[in-house]
Length: 173
Length: 183
Image 1 (cartoon, each protein chain N blue to C red):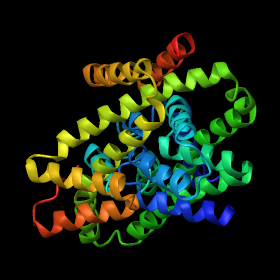
Image 2 (cartoon, chains in turn blue, green):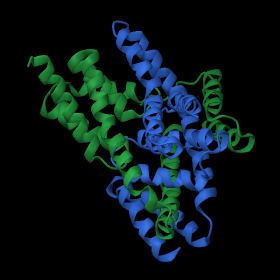
Image 3 (cartoon, helix red, strand yellow):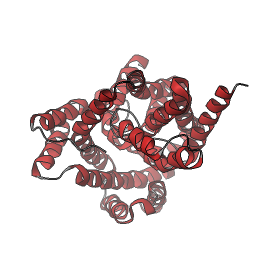
């Protein structure tokens, strides 16, 4: 189980370009679809919690998913595994700092991967939607939070928005 | 205590505090890191910070810890980098662990489940908003749009691994020989 958790989150860490939101679909694929350790609804719960707590979403989600799977050992292992690929690349770049060309190559590769990152986020919307939009009320929740996030941008804090709809859910769902 | 260790402790505590008090993901940390390291302490120039930001979002991994590593390495070498990264990541690890240990039994109650149903729906809307926002940034024409949608369709329709979908989109981008959009 721990070995599976390690390899799963190493793969998540390798694909985690552009941070948290892109990792949602990777974690979903590894943990919900391949391993079957969590349901889609539990995955949405983890993302909500990761957005409401301090820190990077990818790290929060890895820690919490690992904990749900095997407790403390899972939490520590998943967190380490999701960071290891980036630490490897960062250390490599640090070693190559005398060669500015290495940085340019890395930035070019990052640029090439960007459309795929957006595709991962689009796919995450579909998978999260399937798990969380069950009634017309929750559909309305998703639509309104979408509109508010687009309309207010940074002025409306995502953590606050999620908390608000969570409380609304307690009253209406 | 040597000056080197004082610097490391300072690096660690700056990133620990930013990590502890920034809600809503790594992107919210970026302006705070800039304020502490560029404006307040002048350890990095604005140009160096922007370069680290571009590099940090061009490699795999969460952006804020990457940025912590890159800024830390400019200030205190490889040890500084690791110390900054640890400071950045440790608060989220400890907070999540605390929540998991303290509140997990409460999460299965019907009231909490209703909370998470509402919160989950809001998350779906939020993620959709970032998909649209990022999509508009990188998709300039129909070809870009098709690239994004085809990769998403591969994941959703054929259930291929998202890593392969990333490669699919990158391979087409390379084949079509367009300039990648950095930053």
